[in-house]
Length: 241
Image 1 (spheres, one colour):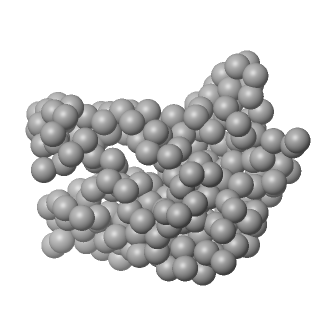
Image 2: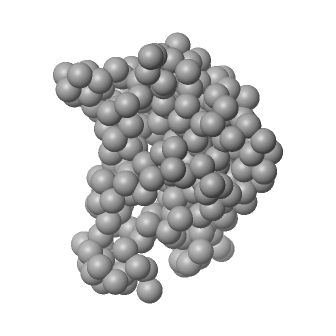
Image 3: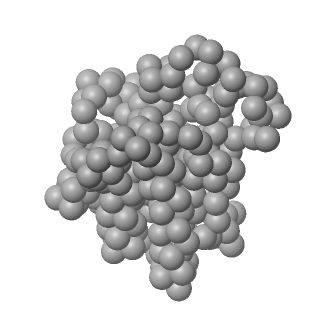
């Protein structure tokens, strides 16, 4: 029996890499990336060395053409059963400092990419497939100086609920995982040690999440047993208070 394929947009590092590793156990994985091609290639080399099937696809997930290319590669690997959207990023502008460019850049990265991924998934994922998008606790908590990021991720969550209704007749589920602070290179690079310590103390587990913590939540929503869960937002925050 042919192995189905999975597409992980933003699959080269951090949470995306952890998701790609988990999916590679029973899917041929297309690892989407844009800027850090070498990192994505190293991941794919590891997955292949471990006996999996994987391929890098470098494309811009904020553009129609880029998303189309990523889906094309995934379909070449097998019947496209799973799509996971791990694209995103944030900065810290004050409301008074917002510009059109700051707004457009954040919405393109965090929301437009998700809407394009949902569109292509609805067109291409096979019946009974699974679509999972990564949001952020910021969508609910609305932290200061994260207006564009929080707004975009809240929009992503709403769009996923809409998409879930439109594809349900084909047995496809659409869900969202909402991580809290997760220990990735991106977080460490853009956050002070004092702020990281504070983040780790705000959840019941009293630590940062790991990429594997979040990947585990994503994988639960990709199984056959999750077929009655759709349009849901699953918190993966360690009991954020």
